[in-house]
Every structure is written in C-alpha cells, then in structure tokens.
Image 1 (tube, helix red, strand yellow):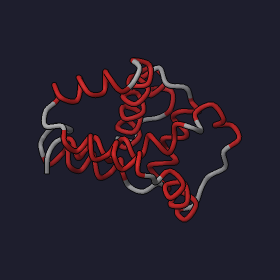
Image 2 (cartoon, one colour):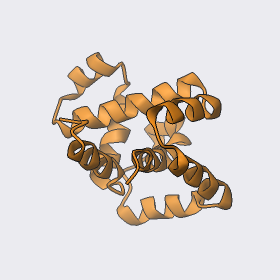
Image 3 (cartoon, helix red, strand yellow):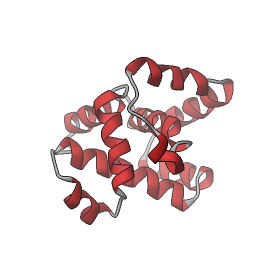
Length: 137
C-alpha cells in the first residue's frame, strides 16, 4: 500500500474533528454510532475527490507540495500536532508531558484521546502501518 494511504486515514480523522476544534468544551463523549453518523454527514463527492487525490500522492515530496497548496501552514501544523499528541497518548504519556512536548492545549489532547478510545481506529491503523515500516517505534 502506498505511503499516502496513511495520510488518507489521518485526514479522515482530522476532517471530522476540525469543525469541532473551537467548541471542544461543548462536546460530550461520543459513541461509535455517533462517530459513524459524523462521518456519514461529511461524505460527499468533494470529500471522495479529496481522498482520491491524496491516494495519488507517491512520496513525501508530493505530500509537501500538495498539502502546502491545499492547507495553510497553521492547518498543517495543527494536523501534525494532533498526530504527535496521539502518538504520545498511545505511548501512555501523561497530559502534562504532552502539553510540554507538543504545546497542545489540554482540550486538544482530550479530543485526540477520545478519538483514540472511541473513534474509528484511524490513528491505530496509521500507527500499526508506520510500525510495520519501522517509521514509528
């Protein structure tokens, strides 16, 4: 499977969480059916086109070029920060050390943690595949 497939799973996680970024204090923990409903709400031809476009990327250089054109640097840094937070949570790190290492807010850490526990296993799919390729310890 091409490296970009990992980006697809990551983007799926990010896309359904992005619109809730500023309202995190109003979010209650979601069950799996509610998360599936959220994914169903964002499904569209435009989203399919985005994900198909991502799947055509073949290298890190392609990813840098495409995502630089597609996203602002703040959006990309936010994606990278959330993935870093998820990695540290997966390593059973405590919130205080994650805040210190990533600069993420506790609200962001909490939301990522909820996705790890009650989400669609997107982070775990990515982590497992990165580990298979020795890109993640």
